[in-house]
Length: 139
Image 1: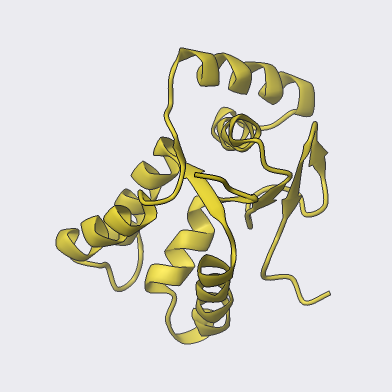
Image 2: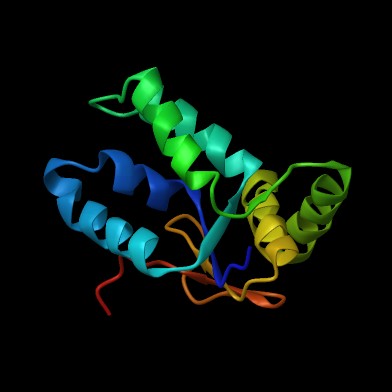
């Protein structure tokens, strides 16, 4: 399977559970999921499950969250292994990122994509061959 971009947790959460004031982001996230040849990582799938079942105002059922993960897992998913952890350590030091954000960048690099869709990392910033893009910006 090929991928042209990487989806971070927040994009997936908006797609699955964005409501009310977040409806614009939900629609944009759903468009991205439909249009893009994307991949993600095991870390993102874990964060997604915890967030949508426990950390949002109107949580999804565990069953609904698991169904989302089943659909997302049809795309390329980079596993978290020792090599990815070591890459994240290096990237966190090089770019002064939290370890968890660096692990997302490392997974995007491992997937071989040039675009990382995220709301959490500096928009437009290049991290080696991967550029962070906030898909919710209005500019």
